[in-house]
Image (cartoon, rainbow, N blue to C red):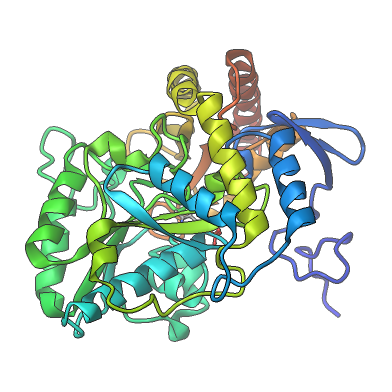
Length: 450
Ligand SMILES: Cc1ncc(COP(=O)(O)O)c(C=O)c1O
């Protein structure tokens, strides 16, 4: 059998997701995790930007244990459980005022896919059954199940499964550092937002059900906020053509950007919001779709969708405890304050020639690497710069989230820096100091070896 270096020797029965041996973690506390050899790592990315409240919060697992003991499961098709209803209420209070109705699921992909189905049924209920297409953006990520991947504009993740995907249109991303329209901040007239109107007209508004977007693009571009005014234009276009606006707040929600949800920075409300990750902070699989009263009101029949684990009592007990913890500890405000410190310090990374762009909002930051700062030329993918940075950080005791393909789906290297919202100033300094050292080491390696 040929050697397969991506296989993890310790995971003998598991399909491998990663590129090599996995770091075996055994424990977490606050912003730190420990491996089996007792080495400590500071988690600079909250796992894949999900452990918002940090590790080891006793009241969360106590809430889970209490529910496990009382009633671990009830089928939401037939039964009601108090904790599920309470979690929905609390979530609806936590989300922007116009979003009032909740549908639970088990993660981000399920949430975006349920949102697309909800939009489709909404139009059917209103007698507009021809509407089904969801317009999305290139260089976005909405999940890996087939419906969610059909919306995702992540070229690498789509490539293998292309023949299985639905024919959903994609418009250019809002990516100021590499503007697809050749504009700069002074000449910007939000062509990227107006592209939505062009796409709706091209498809025919009578076929368009929804537009989906991440308010700040996460893994695919490496934390890229849309320019100010972008979502106001999007909202206006959606209203004009009767298209629902779905905000994918799976990565950006629950305080991550210094507001409860990232779209609040833009002064706009969606019709439907998909959430996951921070909702349970990774303590258990949980996602949700939160819809406006107008969407809910259109439903003359039940929502024809659901899974065995829709409204899982233990997951909802965790979700409820996490939202309460975020509020009690004022983690949203904390993310705003600590985020200013993080971004301020991250800008010091411009000392390294290979750092092309530092961006973000709150405790949600990204660093893009370039071979040439002037021309923004990326490194050839085979130099694996994002992985080298990841590996150097790991050696130095820091976990960050690497990514590639921001330029064209293949070229481009970035990392996401997004520690748990409980992080303090000295821990942020620790993260940035390790980044400095690690990026310096990678620069050295790149200079030595082609
Ligand atoms: C913006 C966004 N949407 C959806 C998803 C999919 O979520 P999950 O991996 O929980 O299915 C992700 C995951 O990273 C995401 O970042």
